[in-house]
Figure: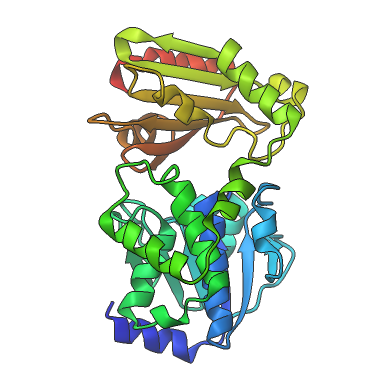
Length: 323
C-alpha cells in the first residue's frame, strides 16, 4: 500500500465508519478520537461504532464526537470501514464480527499488533510502533498530512501513546515516540490534564478493590518469578466493580523486585479474562495464544477461558513452568 493509494482511497470516500476492539482501552479510544477528528478536518462524515460501552473514565474523551455502541438490529451506513487497534475481526466480539465480515465496503486496518489476519483490503500494520495512535501519526506523516493535526487530534493521539506505553516506560517507546510527543506538545496540548483524567479519577470502591487484590489475592511463585492475581464475580460485586477499575493492576506484579511476569484473572458471566504481562527476555504472547485463546504483544497479551475461575486457575497453575 503506497501513500498515494491510501490517500486516493480516503479522498474518494466521504462516509467513514470507524471501529475498534471490544473492551476499548486508552489506545483504542485515543485512536478513534484522533481519526474522527481527522475525518472532520477533511470534511468527511463519520460514525464511531464501539463493540461495547467504553469505561466511564474514557467517555469524557468522546464528548462532542458522534459515536454509538453496536447493536445487531441497527443499520450503520458508510462507504469506508476502519478497523483501529485490532488485527482480526474476532476482536470485536462474535456478534459485531459477523456484521464486520459481511460488509462489502472497502476496509482499512490501522494497527500495531503482530500477526494480523487477512480481513481487510488495506492493511496498515506497524508492529514496532508503541501504539495505534503512533501508527496513525506515521500514516499522516507518509501522507504529508501532519499539518492537519489540531488540538482535538493531539488529545486522542497522546491518550493512546500514554496509556499503551505505561506512561512512556515500556520498551516499545522509541525516539520517534518522543519526537511525536514533542510535536503534540507544541500544538498546545496540556498532557498533564490527560494523565489526570485517566489515572486520578479513582472512586473509593475502586481503590478498595485494588488494595484487596494486592493484599489478599496476590499469589507469588518465586521459583518462576511470577505473580498471579485473580478476582471472582462475587469479589468484584463486593467492591461495586465498574469497567476500568482493574486497568493496569497486572503491572503492579512487575514492580515486585525479582519478578518479570504477571497474570491477572477476572471472572465474568461469560468466563475468565486473562491479562499477561512480562519484561526483559520473557515474552507472554505465544503462551496466551497457545493455551488461552489469546495473543497480543511480546510483553502484553490477553486471553480467555470459557469456564469457572477455579478451573481457569487450576489450568494456569498446571502450565506455570511454560510461562
